[in-house]
Image (cartoon, rainbow, N blue to C red; front, side, top):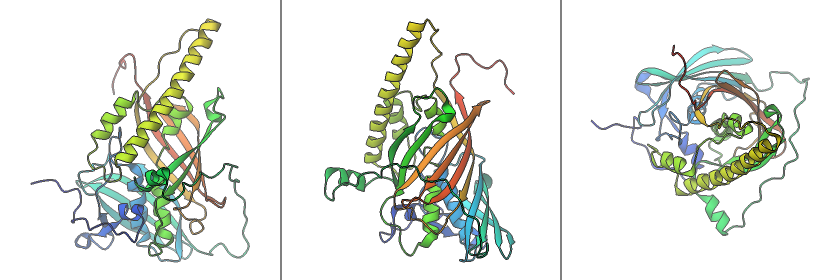
Length: 367
């Protein structure tokens, strides 16, 4: 019997919706209960990852939970744990538990399962709109003064290149304090947005799901980036991983080309920094530092605090700023702030992950 990547045959793409809405679409599995859902379409296995793209589990769990919550409640926090690597060749079942329904707050847990085992779990809290009263306190970190990406002229080669691809697009926006000797001082900035226009039918929930999906991109990689350690040792390694994708439903040739181009640019910059560092060490007589390569990079947990869940559009440019206050013991912590195009702080995220380097010698003992 052949494997099925979805329980039900996937419908045709709904072109009245943005691509990300199609990617995150859920189907109820009524035979298993009123609050059980499954992925409608195949899941993406990113290059070099142990399993499916974590953002899909985050976003679809949020979408499943929102289907069980009254419309006048909006999510304000979501705390997730990645338990096992998800298999893109097997459907996911999202089981929602209605933990509590209060007058001001609603609590849900969602467990994503494959082969009857949990691969991902999250607890979400929703607050009723306006429950804080007429008098409230307000403050927020201001959006950095970073110019918006230039929009390509309609019909231009750049516009045609940006038209295809995955469900969201991103543009580099620089690294603050790039040359600082302290990794914790560096802030990595990107502009991100969902491709196309999110439908009115999707409502604000579709924008929240899209935002949740995007928050997992580039996130744990912040730690290797602030240490100037390349994620892949060579373009050939990345190309090999891209060609081994099981279900590249969110990826096409343009994405592969773009990924390779960005990698080559980053590798060239990395090589220049290493050469400069080697020259400085030779001048000062300092010993050559050990070469560092990432051996494993896996997300462990992911938290999102939604500050203004109804006041942004995920299909407009949002600025992200990522930093890492700590790394050690084979783990690292990253923090991400996200602002809307209009400068509103819409989310703060935290993620801890396993970040292990390739070792010159095997460990002395294994537990």
